[in-house]
Image (cartoon, rainbow, N blue to C red; front, side):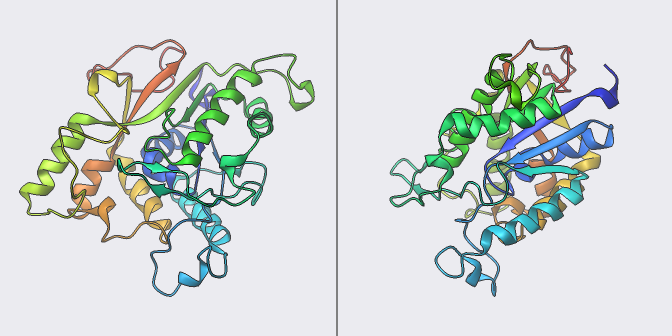
Length: 302
């Protein structure tokens, strides 16, 4: 397989998820000539507006945040060089479900959910929309969340379900042939955070005198999205792409502020924390590993 023949598909819940989780990976593969496709399942209509003067966009006011965030997504993808980015079913087909925090500090479904919320989507219908994209793009690799949606957000969990079901259905020749020729995705990964890196990052923040960022987070009892290193399968490091990732994150300005936790400790710290992206392989054979002891290419072995 040549570099230009490789194809990878990312499935995310809202605009900004892709830049936070996979910005370096996406920029690296674009630079290598890989076909990179992003599918975003909602426009993030229920997100919190962090920009003074734009509060009127919120769902409980003008309800125009989704349209605004679609523009932010376009800007972020331009920073990463991704030209093929789509909204599942088209803009507005599924609405951000919103969330609340439970007693354990995890996200969960809100008390009131819009009738068109992604959390309420029929699984087969939503998966069929993604099947059509999979059969068109024919990706060798698919990246999405784990079964807990990394931290419990209902739209992340639903994106996980839809991505996995679609990958199975896309390979079934008898499933809706009208959606295209069957395609079997060779490798599926879940995004992850390294426990050792997170512990080191929290320690560095505390040593610098920052007690507010990740306040209350216990290095010995990390949230579900943080995975012990022996459970990791792949790592993507690309120092030359960190600036593109951080620019893409900043493009999502209604959701990410430069004085917020993503950029705690300054840009140098942000580059250290967000410049390395980890993955768990959940479908397909593990390929050759590098000096890190992990795959250093998501196409390894293909």
